[in-house]
Image (cartoon, rainbow, N blue to C red; front, side, top):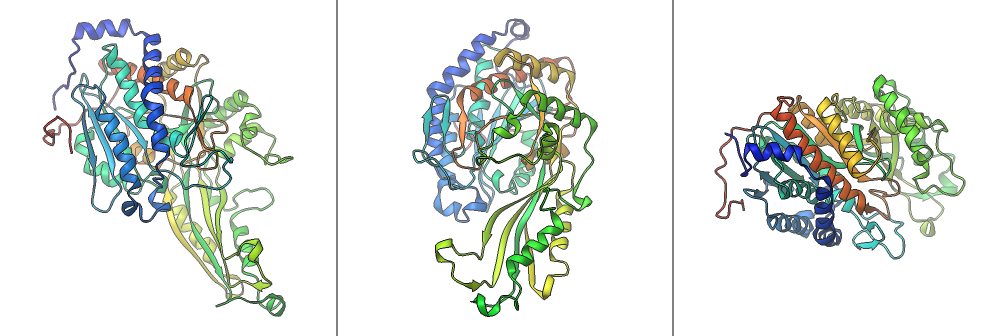
Length: 512
């Protein structure tokens, strides 16, 4: 397609580059958050739109559609000239919100987020709850606000702030998926389906990550991969009296413990097979050291540790590397064990656990999953029935080198809207979309950031969104998107917009 413009003359664009008013950006974004975005997030938190992995009947329940409708209706009300919005629904898949916003030049920015949520989890404070939005000071409590229901609002707030000052920007594509917490298995189908309309973005912005503190902008330099599934050990067809069978029939729990020791050193937590490790680049080691210096004891004190509990190491750099580049095991669920008040003297027939194995950013998750299955199922002790059903395998991501224009833009954005310079650190979580986009758009630059800071507790109880950080991140995105246009005009970016015809408009310029 040719240049898509929104009515800013070249002279006005040149003046805008000189006269960007950061205070006005900050004020515009802050007002939009206070008057519109926070109330929308309050309503969004009330919707129990759990990801398909945690709600197999999501389509029947309709909560996902409610969340989509809330975001769609808000987005359509925004005064963005030429904006086209479509809720794309491929058969049998979760919906996706797809927004196209015209801009200047032939370049493209892709902004990404998701609207599905993790399940409830136990342990919420008495006055809080996953679907009960509560504002206390700067914090909005409830499931999904920070992880990351705010993404569509923050993305459009950034673009609206630029347009309010008539600041030029490239064509922007916003994609909000509904399957991320399940591994984003629907997303590749949508990316392929929409490839011509997406084009070739030279900047990809993802707001689904974390921040080490709330005092500066944090860029995610890597994301761990993940594999896992359900491991079951069966020893009996039915439970029997423990006094009769113990010492004769081996405990399924003991066998399970023995099998897991093939994978993990129970004394240190180290993952034993070297096949599941990867070499850590020297730059990432240095970034971990610098991040450790910035965060100090907050690296571990941010977690709600039980009284007297200590981290696995006192070496702060090692803790950062453990969390971002080394494989690690978590058992996130268990079956076959009755509740304590219902546990009789029975040798149980089976024990099953859900295995969650975080992988290094550069590890191949599919091969790691296959290795894990072979490791756990091989040579079952005592001839027991050991099965490992692999549920998911998503590779991680290691960011490409930051282009000088983006490094400068991020530095200016952090200093302008936060104060201190930005910080760079890997994240322990996974965003499968990033690895996929890295492969599809190898020349693109990435801005991966987020609002999940200390104690925000994504996936756990008492999850919250730190509202001031949401505002600042939105303003930072606006500044970076503006800088991207300037870099593109100088030939410093490599993206090329799509050449697809946009023949799918509805009567009002939007799609159904």
